[in-house]
Image (cartoon, rainbow, N blue to C red; front, side, top):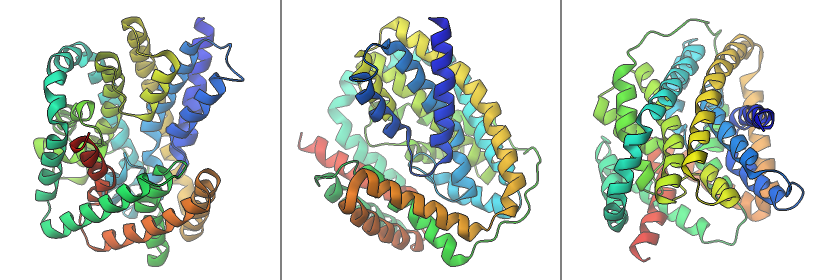
Length: 396
């Protein structure tokens, strides 16, 4: 059994690297595919091996997915905040440092997660029954708080409502994988088109280790990340902004550490929440629940062990990949690379969501470009998920 677990772990890291480096391909898609296979072709395989595969894949993804965010400006929903500070460092020849900073935060988050698991179990079990009655009102409060941090508050509110209306409309369509064209347009293809329009040029990248304070941004991530255990629709981006408010991290490098830590902690807390309150907050936990139901304490210990091992391996893998891309990035025509990435995204949307998905992609892309030009935080576009979630829980 140990050999099979090791094989599943290594396969998970391999596929997590692929999903992390490929814009538009998320671990959720692999999870859905795996569930269908487990019910048919792989029905005789022990579900534990699937769980190990999913956990290691998602943890590796949480490390590697900052690479396309920094080098391509093509994030997913967990890394959209890394685009601006990451791209600014990339244009200064410090893309390698930007990736390392997120990796530092993610690795620290792994060890902190293991350390605070037991207190988190106690805290969630004692408070969730009370808090769940106020979920829509807490989401409204968090949304107002995030908008209040903007200098252009009315503009930020407009972006939030515009993206929220778009999300509510699309999520109520009969569309396969609606989140793919919605989020790809808002956060991916819109950024790529802006890069192509601006003819972005990437200078030669330096391979140097960054210098910045780690303690304050990591503690901000620790304080804010548990919110995602309770509040559906609240992602890593919003948790990172709240964590930044708590830690008062002002420099771009510290903020990248905070984003890396938040991204991994949110994923880790989703496994704990599945065990404690049987709630799925990520695609990975949905897949795990489909495969084994509610995890036992023994399964949770196995999951956390895989988190630790895969996190350490993913850290060194991310450093290697960051150096590789930094060395070879200057040899690639950035405009052509952006066009190629855009073509991959369009193809994926068409294959998974059809012509209606392409229409949604076009609408969300133009919405994303419009919102970017309004010069407010892109996380306000996460109203596309928050507003429908608020409406759902208000009228539940």
